[in-house]
Amino acid sequence: MFSKQILFNSFLQSNYSPEKRAAPSWIVIAGFILLIATCYFGGAAGLLRLVFPATSLLVAIFLYLRHPILYIGFTWWIWFLTPLLTRLVDYRVGWDPTRQMLVAPYLVVFVTIATFLKHLPSAIRQGGLPFVLGFFGVFYGCLIGLIYNQPIPVIRGFLDWLSPIIFAFHLFVNWQDYPSYRQHLQRVFIWCVLLLGIYGIYQFVVAPEWDRYWLIESKMFTSTGDPVPFGMRVWSTLHSVGPFGAVMQTGLLLLFTSSGSLIFPASSVGYLSFLLTQARTNWGGWLLGVIMIMGSAKVRIQMRLIAIILVMAICVIPLTTIEPIYKVISTRMESFSNLEKDGSFNDRSASYERNLNLALSNVLGNGLGNIWKVNEKTGQIEAVVIDSGILDMFFTLGWFGAIPYVGGLLLMIFSVSQSNAARFDSFVNAARAIGISSCAQVIIGSAMLGIAGMIMWGFFAMAMAAHKYYQHQGIKV
Image 1 (cartoon, rainbow, N blue to C red):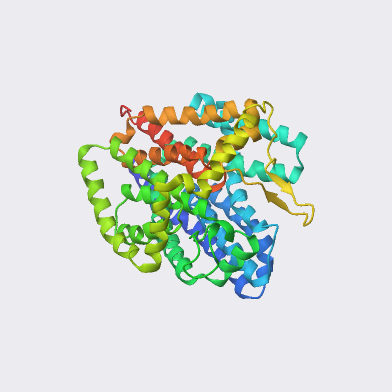
Image 2 (image 1 turned 90 degrees about the horizontal axis):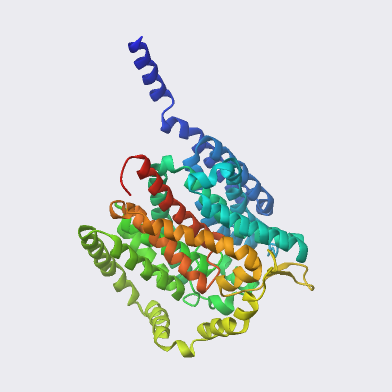
């Protein structure tokens, strides 16, 4: 009987191994890519505005049910690449002011609403109180938004605010698979830094026609540079400089926890493209992250990190001495010493002076969708830019929504700060630094929304999942 059990287990391992179970998932992903390429190059690029979001959702559902780890990677890549595909389609078939293809990442993430609803009754008992608080803060903002604002802007705001929370909760409740999720995230972001970094440098040097077309039609050239070679701030495959800066900040911090032959080429192109974003907020976030990683690591790991930083500096600094690149980076660096004459800094300061008291006195809030207004001339939804996450929170959620939402963020910061897992798990150290440094940027921008919010909430969730995983392994954390 015992020998039969051994044979049966051997049969299961050989016929239902992770590699064999992953094969259908990779076939589905390959089919998805083939479909997109066929539509684009086969004269049906316009169909992608409907086909791409719909098929992205279908693939996400399949991966969520069949291969959850691949679902995580697929989600990140949809966030990374959808804006570029949107620009390519616009360049081929004409400008789409509705930007409907950009809904694809939100649809892919919203598959995890099944996880949230399934575990919501036991979420607090499992340690998921921060996510529950965040959810109820957003839910309150949604109810107020439906009263004061039009439905479509409310839905748009709901996607931005809720997506990071439910995706992060999905990562947290799957804490049993933390080692696999950690390895997969590291792999995803190594390739992200390498590929997005290469395209970012290409974008800066060549200024591809589809990127120039987007820059002109979106009227973003006032903040993103001139649509000419060596004239644009780099945003690579993302839809603007800020999201790309957040992604590269995260990826470059994660490189400290990774190993392999791709590390140094990824670092070279990653740091160069990161500098070419001219995103001082993300530069500061990266520096804060490095300080936190160094401060929490053991001496042996600190020495290793210092060596890595020196080698990376040797690789990157010669590239920054090339004349067009040197001028762009040095000019932006010099602005740190003369902030009182910096237009961006003065605009943010003036915004705080004008709006802080107004935002804090708005007890009920204006609800989700309040920053999305319908242009009466074009009929399209346009965002009103608020260069402060704090102002955005209180204007949108009011006190009744902001208190639970901010409470959730503070609980996550407290939770990851109390854990000792960072002392022996370098990924936890980096995830904690990424989460806290991203949260600090809420002072300057709405870092809790979109892909920046995915990063902030997601890496807090990974650090919390690691703590729970090590606790159940009997390791004192």
